[in-house]
Length: 218
Image 1 (cartoon, helix red, strand yellow):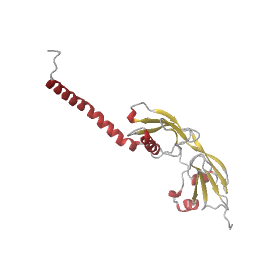
Image 2: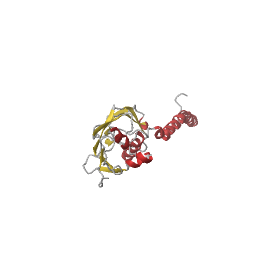
Image 3: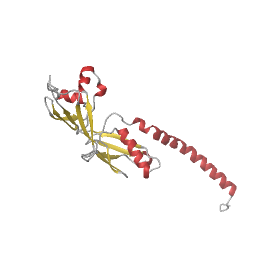
Image 4: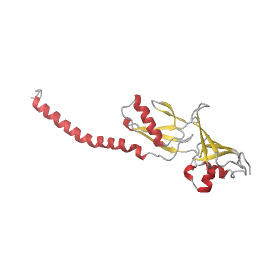
């Protein structure tokens, strides 16, 4: 009897097995879907990554432990599958979404990327002030501050008497090539006199702030 094949009994057994597996897997599947849907919503979208930051990187679909990444002096992180990828200036959320897009181009049907900052260096780097400022030179950006153009100018002792406060120029490198630069012109007078802080540009390590002199001196 033990060796006899009973089609009806086998079918019933397989159906019962499927129901058990479905009952066991349902919470797991639901949790995975919930994690995938909400994962990006909890990532930091305020702090902008800087050189020296230590990150944890995880692709939820891999079910592996998080990997440690470091933002290198060139501003990149070495990402599994992708290789070097620019990170400086991005938030954890922006970087995670960018890496998700890259991974899904070739390696994953769906990739839920989680990035968190484990530790920050005491200094995020330096910015540089030149021109009509009382104390030109480099300034450190500490890891726990958001340094803006107006704050940097105040820290440097303020403008000289003939500074053109309406045309402060910030030059920022956006890549490794000499042509990969971006320029901003900030009306700092409007920030100081009218409190229009929405015009106050947050600075990134390596930014060069040039304060020109007025063409006409009163």
